[in-house]
Length: 430
Image 1: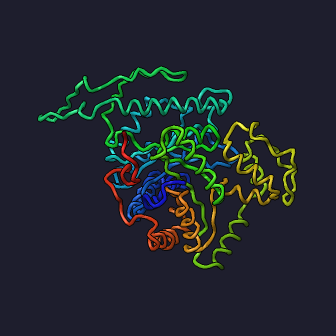
Image 2 (image 1 turned 90 degrees about the vertical axis):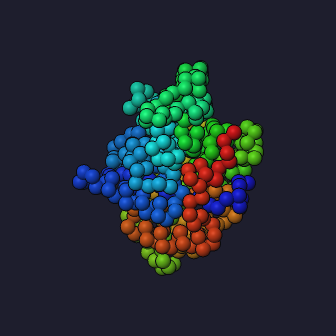
Image 3 (image 1 turned 135 degrees about the vertical axis):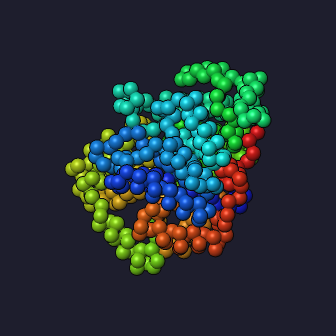
């Protein structure tokens, strides 16, 4: 299993809602609110801010991408009003170039004082905005991602820290003998180097990876320091972590496998009756006709569910085989499993509200029980908590769940290092 008891559970909050100004009609309000929430997260000793990123505006309104901000720029702004919290930007290895990204993330590491991280994804949308007529198949996207990460690591590792020095007069002196090219030649990238950004404070900003297809899990097991996953059940989490650890051993990482990060969607109430009311209100707000489109998207995007009765299971002919799915295979596997269990379309739509993530509704004590179970079993090292910035949940998160996790001594009471890598208590880079 994972690194049980080696460290306390690390906490992240989803920063997409923190940095988005989608609902702010007045210029400047979005960043003002983002700064306020980032300061709250740091005051609460949250380990990091984790951003998602989508590169396509969804006309159907399913992804909520209107108003999405570029994570690297937004986090750079937040780095100047915080001093300890980690800053993780999600980036696409399918549509970006590793040399440019190495400069950007390396710069973020510098201006934040060593708090940058980047989350590698291969993207399931956006091809029409990057000159592609269709999304490349998963095998090609992950082959490109492999080279992308190799180039990033090589660029960060090549230059020596003493290559850049400030003179007594305040100028910058470069020792070119300590700046090293990498001469990378692959199928997707040819990068000479050296990187023209000084070596980042962390040497390598912390590397996250998200992707649950077979190729995605292999990529994470080989390179990632933290794997982001959305295992909806305890049994699924155990199976997933065992698989990651087995693959990591094959890559010689038996002593330092990736940390496992799970996104935790929750409804928090101050009593069982309050939880039931909040759940009922949530279900009453669901647009079930739009929900058909959401479930189709969860199944790979090629399924027409318009004529399926809400209270009947999906016909077998509409449940795709994973080999037919070219977008978000991990998510499709989760929802294919739900459909094969016989869940009705209405039940699938309710599940799709959480997009296949781990979801628990309960009091702070109930939620802490669920979190503690996974942590004690060694299948949870980092948890992404939701609720910050949500008026009906923020107070219960900050004054209910977090204090309960601290009372059980599951999470840190303060930052444990001077940079993000040490806050996560990652093994030293070799």
